[in-house]
View 1 (cartoon, rainbow, N blue to C red):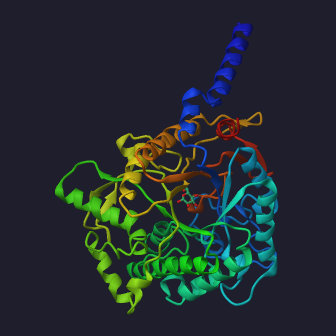
View 2: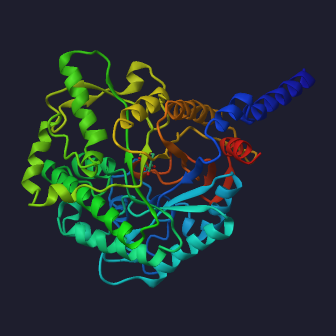
View 3: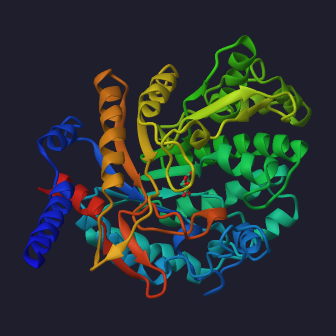
Length: 469
Ligand code: BGC
């Protein structure tokens, strides 16, 4: 019996290992993207850096938010992050080891300008030089996001994105970064997912700065859209050779029972989640015909603003995780629709309750391909699963399957002629998942938060095999 058990265990072990090995279908899938395609892995300052008050860094809204009781599900905070501040070199080398061409990270505004504007923190400035130099030494291309949600707290105290003066402060921050790092960075992203940080931060109140106000939401929306275009213009003016982009979240929106009320709810949700921040930058204005609550945006517009909203980005980063199912609900402000929780319908979800719906990637890419944009990147896509670290390994076969499925839909979109030129995994390492704390793990690399030890998961080995062999 003992021998049989041992043989069985041995077989199971081999099946596990074999599963993480790419097969010929995986090889074909990766080949279908061609050799000019950029493969990368991403992270963001607040989620990984730690060193929240070290070396002259000022506080950000997230430093403040996470220190308030009841805001973070696990009562954790990003004070230590994954200690990227000290371990950036190891992480960059890991990204390289996995075969990535590019490493996407963000700059913490309050590390450079501790008070949001004015006084500069030389140690913060030096830190990003070290990160960029490490990328160069490792032979990996840095892709820099200028704003991934960590607004300097001093600026939030003056109203944050709801105060029009922020446009100037943001422009000065962008200008500084372009002048300081311009020779080392070719790819820039002005902002990460405005729909998320404005919607969750100023309307739903579940992300920093935790506001629940339609007025603040609308004002912040307008100032973010103006800042986005202004940031793009500044980068292009100072760095005409650079590739200047920005990233938007996007999700396929559907109703489960198509009635005229539900169809209208789908349109409203689509305007809110998919169209609100990209269309002004394309010169199309706000989608207020389909989402009447946006008509109130006019109150905050000054003469000349309509033209200022437009900027022609060199590329658009799209970030897709899940599908959104809705039904009409008049009681919900602004959007008049409720999201239906996929688990209630028995649909597959990840550890955060996001529906795993690979077909949604293709349909949202088809939707965005109707815009006059000729250069897309998937700047984030990934999944959190209940990873277990055993014997120095993480057998995350669900994550491998997730990438197989989502990537095959990206490949299909590319075959249909949609100009997608790269794909970034979210995320390189496990990290602090905002109001969810450290529990959801998205990384290709596992992080043990008590020792900060990094361990490449099977999904990481899978990418490595496909990208380097
Ligand atoms: C954000 C990331 C986040 C990820 C997973 C994206 O919306 O840009 O910061 O960790 O989703 O939730």
